[in-house]
Image 1 (cartoon, rainbow, N blue to C red):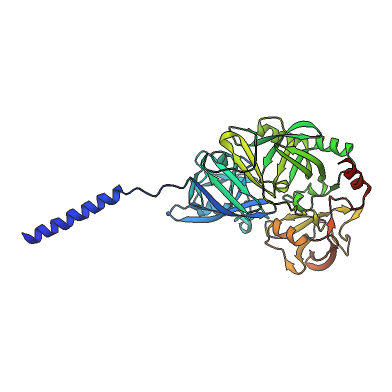
Image 2: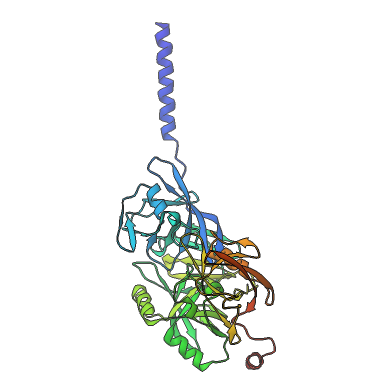
Length: 425
C-alpha cells in the first residue's frame, strides 16, 4: 500500500509540473529586428531564413526591393522548398513559401499569390539574377505592412511592426499605393513639381526620356555621357551601352535638396509601365545611388519617409574604367561596349584592345568569374589616372589591355562651366 501511495504521489507531482509548464508564457514574438546588411552595387542584401518542409530552415540572401511589388526567388530555392514549379517559354512560377524569417521575426508571405522564378540553367539556378548574390527579394507588397529602416552608412536593416521604430531625421508625407506599397515622393526639378518614386532596390536613378532631353537641351554644361558605366551598369541589358546619363544640378526630393544627381533616361514605353504600376503620374525614380549617405526610414502606416544624414562623404561611383558589362549565367562577364571620354574610347579598342563580345577575365590578375556586379565595379574603380590591367578572353585566348580610370560625369576642376556654376551660387 505504501508503495502504491508513493507511486501515486510521484504521478501527481509530474502531472502538477506538466500543468505548471503549460501555464508558462511562451516567448513573445519580437516586434522589430535589426540585421547586418551588405551594400553591393548599391543594392541592400541581408541574411534571412525560410522554413523547410522538415521543420528546419534554409539560410538565404534576400534583396531588399521596395520599388518592386513582385516576389522573385531562385529555382534552387524553390527546389529546396519542394515547391511545385510551372514554366513557360521565358519564366517559371510557383506558390510562395508561407513565410520568411528576418532575424527571429517571421514575415508572412501568404498574401502573395505567385513567386516569379527566372528560367535559368542549372549552373545559375542558385540566384535570382546574374551578378546579384540573392535567392529571394523582399518586395514592396511585403514591406508595406511594416516600419522599415535602411541604414546605408551603418550597413544595417531594421524591420518592425508599425510604431516600433523611432525614426530620426527630417520627415515628409508621400503617396503610397495601397495595393502594392510603391512610393511616390513630391519633388521639384527646375522649380517645377513632379512625383519621383523611391526605389532602394535600384542601383541607379531614372528620369523620363522626355524630361531628360528637356533638361539636357536647356543645360548643355551639365555633365552627361552615353554608356552605362559604374552604378549605371544595372543588369547588362543589350541597350545599356546606348543609355544616356546626366547629372542633374539640383533636385528637391521631399525634404532633401540633392545636388549632382546622376540619372539615366527612361524610354516612354518603360515609363508608361512604371506609371501604370504606381497608379499616379510620375517622371522617374531615385535609386540608392543618391541615398548612400542616409538612414532612410519608411513609415508605411503614416505614409511618411524619414531621411537622417549619416555621413558627408560622397563616394565617386563614376571614377571607373569605362566598360559596359553583362554578368552571364555561367559567372563570366561579357563586355557589351566601351564608353567614350572626351570624344574618344575610354579604353583601348580594336584588335589589340577591347571588342564587344569579349569577356573580362581578371582585373589586376584578380579573377572576376563568379563575382557580383558590385565586386567587379569595386575592382574597376579608383582614382582618375590610375591604370588597371585587364585580362580579356576572346576566342579561347587571353590578352592583356592596360586601361586608365576616368572621371566620368564630372567637370574638369578648371573648366569654364564649373566656374560659371560657382558664380551663380
